[in-house]
Length: 51
Image (cartoon, helix red, strand yellow):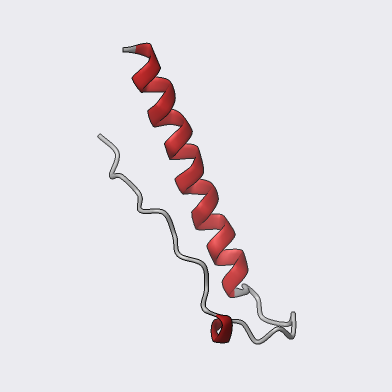
């Protein structure tokens, strides 16, 4: 069984410099983790409906 992911928290206001030069940006990391979490949620809901 795959480990259940926790919904990622939004970065704090002071986590992002706002300059756009960081690679990866804290927002890139957040959106990547959020997408993994969201896809897992869809999969769990699909599995629950199939049962």
